[in-house]
Amino acid sequence: MTIQTTIWKPSFCDCEIYYTWDDSVPESERTHTTNDNTKKCDIHSSLSDNQTIYTSAIEECKKYIDAKELIIENSPSTFYNITPDNRKILKSGIEILASYSGAYPDRILNLSYSGTTLTTNQRNSVQNKLNTIFGTGKVILT
Image (cartoon, rainbow, N blue to C red; front, side, top):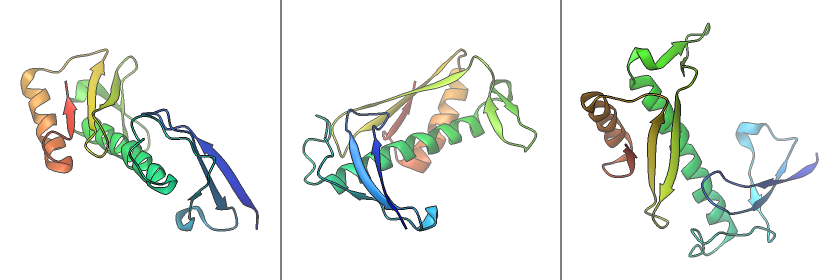
């Protein structure tokens, strides 16, 4: 058993999160415990403790990953390729760009395509799926 320390800088804020974990525990069962070296950014400055900062950053990253997968799954077939293991991936040159706006806990995930465009009907269809999964106004596709 070795206690490991990881320094994580989330993609959507300027926090620097230090957490420890036991490498003898299977990844799916690990507990991550933050420590006092954690530095919170302005966006998360209202949060009271380091574990809450960690949890909020994990939630934001997970929301992005889930939203990106949903968008790819519901995009027109001209936007993606199918891999040999039957996964959909965006075609070369097409990206989904992401940013968050607003203050925690009401931050809004803003997503857009680069390298292609959606018709109004295509965009509305994907936006409706995002609204169903995340709630209206929580994830915005432009």
